[in-house]
Length: 630
Ligand SMILES: Nc1ncnc2c1ncn2[C@@H]1O[C@H](COP(=O)(O)OP(=O)(O)OP(=O)(O)O)[C@@H](O)[C@H]1O
Image (cartoon, rainbow, N blue to C red; front, side, top):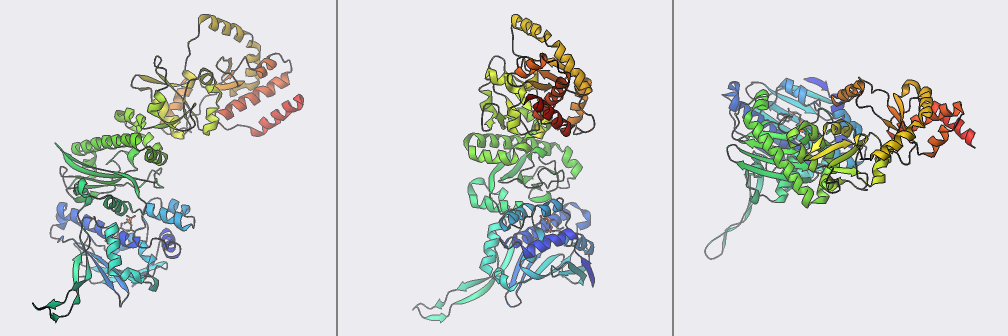
């Protein structure tokens, strides 16, 4: 008998199961049944597609046996089974990505943690919530040797050779005294109905059946009533997505979500669609009410299962739906794909591409309906997944307009986010220009940016985009229908010739100050220039978009390499109408001008959300200026 240690992370999960997660223990049945169903799915596919499994019998069933005397609960399947290596790899380690991040997020707060567990999918280890010892007897399809895996959930497990009639897996849980409720057949049946009613395979269990007393014609009892044990199917086992919408109750949709998303939370919504045309397929998509915590990780867990005519094919294909829809959970099932479809074929398959395109359109239109008719629900959706959907603005050019219409934005004039459509109502119908500002600062900081002053004074609304992803996406979006997207620094407002002339004259008066400021700042600015766009602020920064170095830096950033090419030095713009600038122009104190130059550049940087290169220097100069003033 060989003893083995659990992998550290598996051990941590186990400890959590045993010691801290007492709420909602019943989900261990959902998890084990879901594993059994997966094991049947896997075998089904191999038997149908792989010659090596031709002789293997596929007679799918899951059995649950409760033994009240022995205090054991057994869950048995006739699925793919495991050999010694599989046992080592699967029941002792956690291969799942993001386990570390998951563990770090555990707070010790029962309620929060069990939600996280729900999102993560606790899997096999959940059985240790109710059992003090677990035996797994398993034999892999097509192999001769069976194995017994045992553990008390105390950091160690053992594997030895065993016997089992045919392939499949039997999990025997020796229940804790406190958890004897899970030996009650009604309790088990209720849990199965709740979480596993619509998995595609039948689950059987012994149930007591009441046989009424037999009576003769005169009503005399000839045989007393009795209870008989009957082995019966306790779930419907009718792959929910294959049933017609009108026959499915909301509760059933919700329960099915719980089983496929391993979540105890209700989904936000679902979309069930049967397409019957040149290509026949069914999709059942759910949107969770909370974002899974790995949603922004590159190795996020996909949520869509592909079935071909009810045979499970994969749940590990990121391209089934576009990555910007990775919040979806659910099923795609089609008769029109070849069963032995490989990952490569899947990616280039025309039928799959059609299903995917049509499904994307369907999801987008359902979201549009929700945005219109169920505003609160949409608000919830957008709060959780808006930034994920937003990625579609650059990755799905064909649907860009539709995705834009689903966006909610912060704007200069509104206190809450507004739908893009509502923002458009206030755009100048003649100019048709959509102004936007991006920046990685707080919303209030960005709304107070000096670059917005000329919009404020003219009463023009602006999209205020302060998410990191906005700085990458929006420079790539140039138009929407007949509207143009214009960055605030590129916006031009018509001025008449006289005004222009007066401004040029006025700028001339500041030539001296411009030179003094540039001399003081050296290479930290590209140049200093007068601007008439400012109202309240003395200065602001401007990027020279024609500068090849700027273009290069932008390109690198869009390719996700913003550290490689540093952006060139910015232009410092000064407001000739501002009292501070006017006073500096008239000052002959060179030290003061030099200090002010640096402090002004630093304050302009702060407004852009940039970090100061020399905070100590900034403070020293500021203090020198204040000392002179008081
Ligand atoms: N009944 C079973 N038959 C065959 N293999 C199984 C069975 N139960 C578990 N396994 C194997 O053990 C692995 C680990 O199971 P576990 O439930 O911990 O994680 P998972 O099923 O991969 O993840 P999740 O439960 O979040 O979906 C499975 O991926 C599977 O390979």
